Image 1 (tube, rainbow, N blue to C red):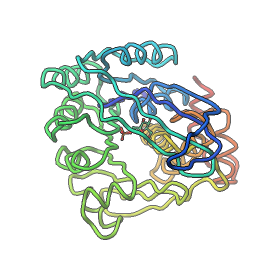
Image 2 (cartoon, protein in one colour):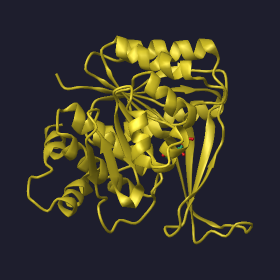
Image 3 (cartoon, rainbow, N blue to C red):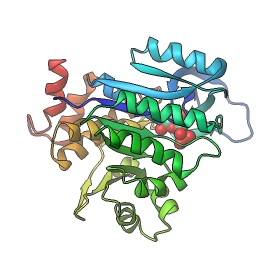
Image 4 (cartoon, helix red, strand yellow):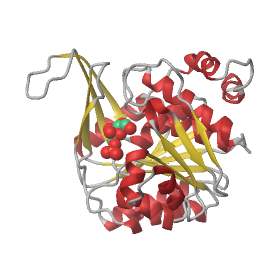
Length: 318
Ligand SMILES: O=P(O)(O)OC[C@@]1(O)O[C@H](CO)[C@@H](O)[C@@H]1O
C-alpha cells in the first residue's frame, strides 16, 4: 500500500510575502507585490507533497477571522484537511523579500492552545493516520507549549502504526528525541541551539539517541543526513538557484519523506530534498513548488538520465 502523509502544523500562519526593491532598516519599504498563502511549516510540506501528487491530509489548529480565512484558502488551494477549531486567533507571519538579501521574517507568537485543544488535535491525528503513513509535525509550537504536547501527538501517530517526522526548534526539538520521532529535521543553528554541541554533526548525534534519522539543512550549502547506525551522508544543493528561500526547508522535508515513504535509499531521498528545496526557492510565495521544473533541477543535480526518476514516475501515474 502506498503510504499517505498527515501534516501537523501546531502554529499555522497567514503567510504574507512582501516583495520590495531593497531593505533598509528604519526606512519606508514600498511593496511591489503581495502574496498571502495559508502557511506554517507543516502546511508548506502539505502543499509540496500535494504538488508531487501525494495523498496528504493537513491538520492545523485554526481560530478567529484569520483561522476562517485559512480554512477557505486551504480548501481553495486543493489541500485536504480536517478541521481542528480553537478559541484563539491564528497568527500572521510576514516575509519581506528583495531577491538579493536573506528575507526579513516577522513571526507573531500565535495563540496558546488549551489542554482540551491539544487533546483534540492528538485525537484527530489518531483518527486520520493509518498504519504505514508518515505524520510530519513541522514548525514552531504555540506559546506555553510543553514537551508533553509534542509527545501527545507523536504517541497518537505511533499508536496508529505511523512513522513520525519532526521539524521544529528549541525545547520541542529536544522533546522529539525523547518522543522517539523516526526522522528529525532542523537547520544548523537550530541543532547547535537545541543540543548545546560545539559542532553540528556532533549535535546530530545527540538528536539521534532516540533512534531517529537526522537531517540537517544548510541552505545553499546543501544538507547532511545521519542514519540511526551513525553513517553520515552529505548532499550538495542544486547549483545556481536564486529567489525566495522562505519555505525551501519545508519543501526539502516533503521531498525527503516522499522518497523515504516509497522505500528509496537515503541518498536518493536526500537528493530529492535538494531538488524540492531548489524548486521552492524559484517560486515567489513561501513553500510552493512548480512540479514542472523538477526534471530540469534533477538533471542539474545528477546529470545522468533516469538517476533521480522515482518522484517523476509517481507524478506521471497520478
Ligand atoms: O514560526 P515557525 O513555525 O518556526 O515558522 C513559520 C514560518 O515562518 O515558516 C515557514 C517557512 O518555513 C512560513 O510558512 C511560516 O510563516
